[in-house]
Amino acid sequence: MTHSFHIPVLGLAFSIDSPLKVARFGISSVISIVDDELIERIRAYYCNSYHKEYLPITKADQNYRSLRITSYLNLVSQAVKEQIDHMRTEIFEPGSAIDRYFQLIPESHPAKNCYYNMLLETNYVEKAKKKQSLRSFIQAGDIDVNIMSKVDKINHDKNGNPLDEKWSDALAALQGFANSELKSSVILSAGMNPRLYSYLAELPSFWQNEDGTFDKKLTLKVSDYRSALIQAKFLAKKGIWVSEIRVESGLNCGGHAFATDGFLLGPILCEFKNKKLILQQELFAIYQQYWTQRNRHFADAPPIKYTVQGGVGTASEHQFLLKHYEFDAVGWGSPFLLVPEATTVDDETLTALTTSVADDFYISGASPLGVPFNNFRKSTAERLRKKRIKEGRPGSPCKKKYLVSNIDYGAEPICTASRLYQDKKIKELKAKKLDQVTYEQEFARITEKTCLCDGLAAPAYLKYNILKPKEQDAVSICPGPNTVWFKQKFSLDQMINHIYGKDDLIKNENRPFFFISELELYVAHIKKYVELNSFSVDDKKIKYLDKFKNQLIDGITYYRNLTHDLKDFSQQIINSIPQQLENAETELAEIKFQ
Image (cartoon, rainbow, N blue to C red; front, side, top):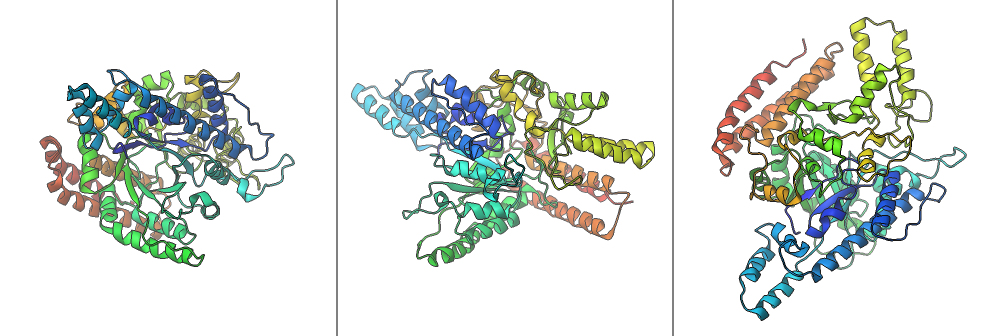
């Protein structure tokens, strides 16, 4: 592994082509393979850019979704390989890609000293040898893919008959990755999907090779240890090894927010650290039993890589996660939205991010999936949503249908962000003859849903000028609240130097320690829960509130003890933590059902 950070999946479009931009510098990133229409359009764009033949894959083609994904991933794989091959032939000189590669790698990388020695070498022959040796160190970053497990619509033929389950959205996407030439990981997020997991076990590319390697690896993105254990055991029973566990903060992240029941990131990471060996042994016993029954035997358990992401913003936090919790890498997501060399964000949205304030970032009910969603008040999609409400036509035309799930109005699911659904719901609401305040609250809940299928794909269409006539250009974006501390566009070099402590792009001592930021988000989360449920209190909700608060209090106690281990942080950060913890504890004590 070249770098100790990766760029996680960012919406649909924001990291759709990140590997083409950064993989040649050894940086790993993740492509979302949810939207095959976006993928096909981006493939056409890059085939044109790279002067490669483009053969369209249309909806008339059998299994077009899987074929589109395979074709795009193969294009990306081949393009990155060509970039690496070209880089290895370059002359070492300032401004060259090969020189930049070694400038960007961390000081801890074994090639860094070799690079410095090459620069200092005065003997021509020896310098040439050192340059040749350095070329062998060059390695592309991983080109990983992401599937949201629960985004798994059953598809139909042209006559409206349901197709076999293996053609569902998630399974077809997985098949597309499995059939590609990539040797990388699929990252499964958003919870367990037994149908998807069972299908995964049928694909030989995910089976362990005789030499212990894997052609395709599996990564689980989870919010806590229990979730990782349950999912990994389910997969081990089917002969599938989890090669990476990617821990993400429940609330201090971008995208959908999968809050825990009050478990905070610090204690969660501590549990993983303490149970790594136990987890590996327990999983291997199950995994080995499966393969022994099929006359295969593996002497040693494959390794499990541990990575973490969510709200990280400084070099000190980055190093603390690697050293204190003994994790392998850290995900930096939202800050890279401000790095055009790494991600794909349209100019208007990029400008809005650089001029944002804290209140512009909030957890909303905008997602049709019914999961809390990190939203951005200054997005053009929010502007469009409000405009439609004002014009008396709330909701969106539902064309892509990736997030259809509601069956209130028939067997065929529809999307809660659609105009069809919201129109029906509002008519029902009017018939209830509610008082004005209650009506407005319920109306806001219905119309808060927004079309993510269009909104999260639009930035790429705008950036590359491939928007079709009459196509919606409003952009949805889902940055984490940590984004507010980054106030301008940055180069790739600037962001990497920031991550490794060579530069400071924030220069603001008022930014709280990221564990404290997450704690404050959880306090706000449970306070909102109480407000929303204050008119329908029962024993179950009271018990949930008590459990949630107790988990947070345990986390606060853990952070009090952790303060002694924060030696590499500024004194201002360390000194502010006790009061911040006390403030959170005081606020928690006041949260109760009236």
